[in-house]
Length: 429
Image (cartoon, rainbow, N blue to C red; front, side):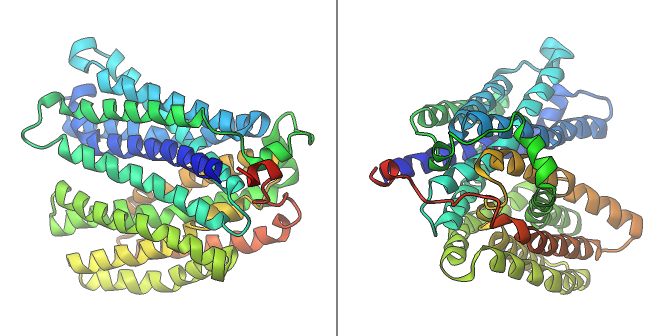
């Protein structure tokens, strides 16, 4: 049992670090713009910095492919050790990187390369770490294990936001933004040490003598196209409500209520802390009572039916209390959907195709529709001139989630080994 907890801790540590880095750069993007992307036009400078942030999302599907391949061929542990090692390097480099004024064009090029490498690692981190803890969990506790891992990512994001906020206070030196990146390097080294001290997942060990395809993802594309498509859809349906509730609602607070960035950050941090505490509860609920598919479908159905009334209310009254109310409702529905999602997706693929299928599919869905949600909504809202566009987009994501869960159900029961049946040597640990 001690080995199980150690494995979960190792997965959580690395996952928290990955999302710590993502939120940290997102928080400092506007501050870093004039330092690394100087321009006479401030808008161009900021867009260049934000574009560097967005570049990380573009790399996620590629990261899912690369780390998925390594995880299916050589083991989840080895892939996750490599992921946290590689993500620590750019975190350190950003912390010590000279500015444009000091080394010229090399500065933004190196910064972009660091963000690309971070995005690559994140693409293989969340899905791989989730698979790792689910394969370590006992039968009947897979949803809880996956939900705890999801909570760790949010925790890393909250810590990154907190450090970002503290290091921009008036008493901090101008170079204070470098401190949280260097602290993140220490977190990374700690996570690397922990991950090198855990054993491989029980499922992978049990299946080590089975035939492994030369390119597992190619086998997934040939033989499990349906479930790969469903994984893409579930990945998108998982992230659309989250980015809508956090990033798009922050835009409304700024544009309609003129709230400061620090005030918006404080609201989002409080909400995320609440979500961190609630995610494992929904994981337990799915394990003990509702079941994976039923809970996810229920959350999606509620999302479809509540989307229009919620945004119709905002159309009439965009007060802070109403915006926060909509955020809370969307996040609760999103949490109910996300908590059992990785446990369900782990049933879609056999052991030696699982990391590749989930890693690539989930990251692709997140990159195509999830991470682009604020940009798509801003474009459609301006183009169509309707403040109800977010409601329709949310309804679309809910219907997509329902369709993919129902569609994927037909293959998952016969296409995988039993998860959670720990071999004798692990059960005694």
